[in-house]
Image (cartoon, rainbow, N blue to C red; front, side, top):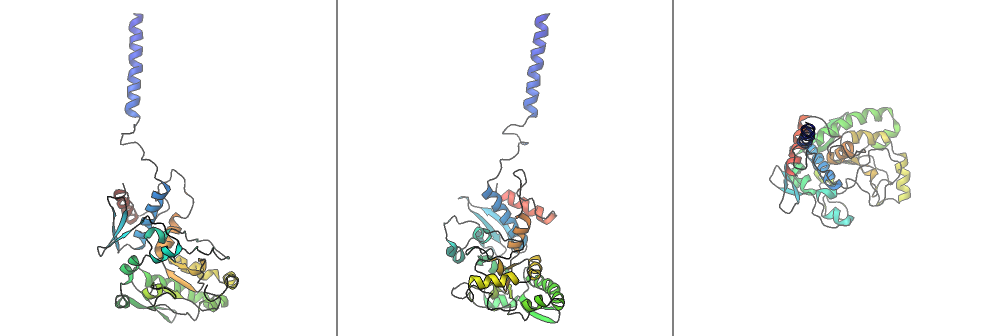
Length: 313
């Protein structure tokens, strides 16, 4: 009788252990949480999501090649590499950037009154394959996309593709009334120094963002540009620049040249991918947070997150 009781007791222990194994997911179970992504993988996914949200009509897919390199696929069929894995200095990144180079430096959305470090220029690195896809690959193509953006009785020639023209219109509809009640804002904003101008950046063979019709220079001051002024003069100008102007433009997806070490204080450039990354992913995140925490919660974003997850398994 005693042996029978012991046998039954042992069987109960074995059954309980078996149930525990069944209910406890092991490494091959479908319920096991995926391994945590590396910081590089997290940032890559955040970068690609920012790009897809910023260029929704132009980026249609993501592909991962056999050599593990990742590409975004454009509507035209062209592919742009995310990270070419090449070691580059800042000049090489400017001259031959990949998408990771373009998004590498985090744009600060906080108020700044001090000049940035010399080579801290978030937004100044531009992936021209993407800009050409969205705004035009030649002067003729760009000019077909230009529109006269009217606001407050003023007219600004700007690219009307990818939401750029609407963004400038919205910014001006805030800025112009403010300038009428604030003399400091008016003096810094008007007369504007220009929008579209098909030209290269001085001293380079790279097209200016003005050549794509996606940048506006506001009222000019001789202390505004790093080639015109010393850092001391640039700092003096920056310290007095109306922050209200900066906040308006950033709200509508423009980066400000005053947040570059190579300062360009009168310059505002429509770069939704830079602002979106800063806005959605610029805060602190916990290790347990999904990589996309901070992104908008809507069906369009969800679809893009799923596309990224499927492509980058």
